[in-house]
Length: 494
Ligand code: GLN
Image 1 (cartoon, rainbow, N blue to C red):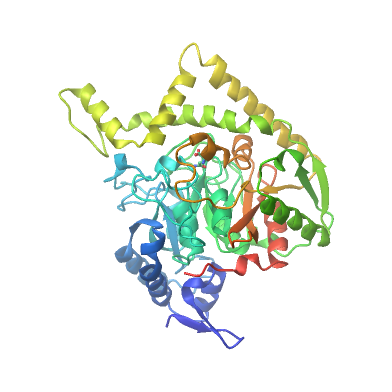
Image 2 (cartoon, rainbow, N blue to C red; image 1 turned 180 degrees about the vertical axis):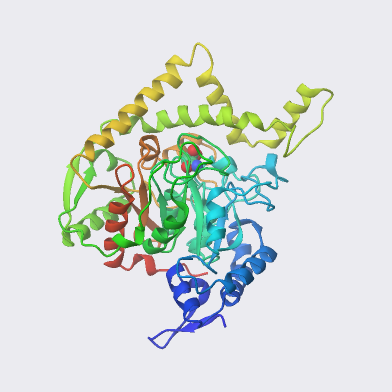
């Protein structure tokens, strides 16, 4: 069986359902795990050649995992038992190709499992495949992938956002029930916004980074990309929490995030930072976000004008710090132990051949910028200065959260753009993360949820930011908004 009948007399395809729907049907024995997995593969067969969301599809593994999930189906604590999920290809999966979107890892099969996918496995999930990304998660469109560009399901001539564009497109196109992405400067939230789905980046330290291929270790976080807010809370329940294998993971207990869904938001204070409503942003985006604020007001929330005065320095600060960390993290790809190796007459030539042919242009650009910013004589002017500014940006948020419960902004200044539109001008691409980057620098959590469409039917995202380790307030407000609107129910026609 691959369809279910609704009480409105129509039918729904199983692949279009959410995690909570699927779990209900599985528990009531109305469907089996293999029904869901087959439905998802039928969908992939129908649309993947147009979307290109995946680098690897793991059909054999899915069938194995489906079989063991079916045996465990009555376990109430296994929220994900039998649920087909896609995983961004910078998250290590034992025995399964993990490329990080790079030719330098074209043959890398991790000998270990990341903590997040171990937790998903214990919970009974079914891996559908590994999704496309900008090489080493550096980019905002998936155009920097070493393999191919993913298409936006709402308009196949446009990008799905990035770097988790494969995950966002796969969720939007119903090629999986939900997915994991990673976010260093916006890579979960921006593609979620541009593809019309929900993306959550947690507080730095909330989710273990063990087994996430490092880009900028002080900024990277793994998080869910889902069809609605409830599914995001469900996935967070499984992946969050302390992990001994990641020394930066926070030793805090995690409560059940679904508990806050449906709670009243009356009296909650919503901060609106003037710095996030800027000259040059798309008028339709601005209107949708302002309308969302009015909607929240009608639900009893109180808007408060606030200021995050150092916002203007965020992009520059990020591109010094992220590139510095990347230049150091990426030194390990030398052709010696794993990944690509291009021989040369001696060791030095082998290094040079491997790295110059293995890395793409954007990755090389960043290694060069980062190496420069860390080099003696420039370190004080760039890297150290950027660290100081980062502290000020963090303090902006701490001050703001003395007055408000959450902060509301657009996720991205524009809706999705055309393939090729920004590839010639890296700065144009960098600017598309202007509203998401400060959140990573400060380490605070934030979600992007659908809040409208442009006149040419392209999705618009709303960002809600919370204070450190207060994922609950974000989920509460996001859920209240989602339940009073219909945006999350629209699907692209494919
Ligand atoms: N687009 C930003 C960059 O290129 C952020 C990427 C990310 O969050 N991984 O660095």
